[in-house]
Length: 97
Image (cartoon, rainbow, N blue to C red; front, side):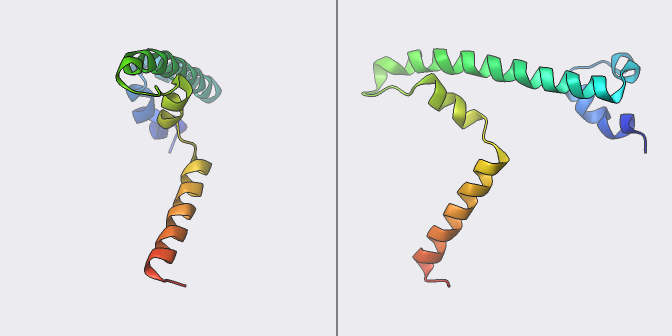
């Protein structure tokens, strides 16, 4: 299987047109994806900033933009860490050894 066949769905969902995608080399495609992810994260931070201002008049302690943003981009390590914590809580709760 060529790399293009494997990455085709990702490319089209990322907004590339078929002709644009097929002209790219693998390293160009990965660079495009990395840059696109950075752009999405920047946009999410901007939205988090404005969301915090929208919430501010309605709560005693408004969340910071960083708190809102961090909820959007959870890393795999954070997911695993949370799963371990949840597992330990369940073991204690149900008396599992």
